[in-house]
Image (cartoon, rainbow, N blue to C red):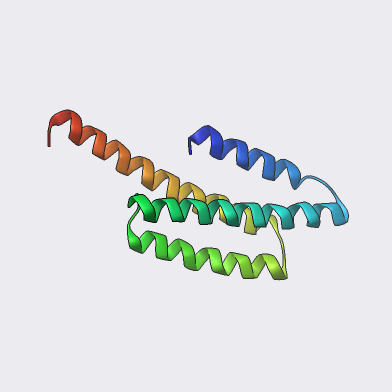
Length: 109
């Protein structure tokens, strides 16, 4: 998933949070579910291809569980922002690994 994809997802979710009243809660609730699914998909891919360390994946799973519980009780922009942060953390770590691997391949290490 590229940076532009992450940005597009962020923009859609944040734009959806601009509505007022009950519609805001409904859109935020949907956003929590969407972010949770995306995070689960990224974690599954990370595990399948060994893209991130097991410790990082475990830590993110724990945080995602807490967020799921929080979203069920009280949906807020802070919860959505936390999903964004966790997704970005996974993506940035993955990008660092790929960059490191690419440099090693170029230098013949």
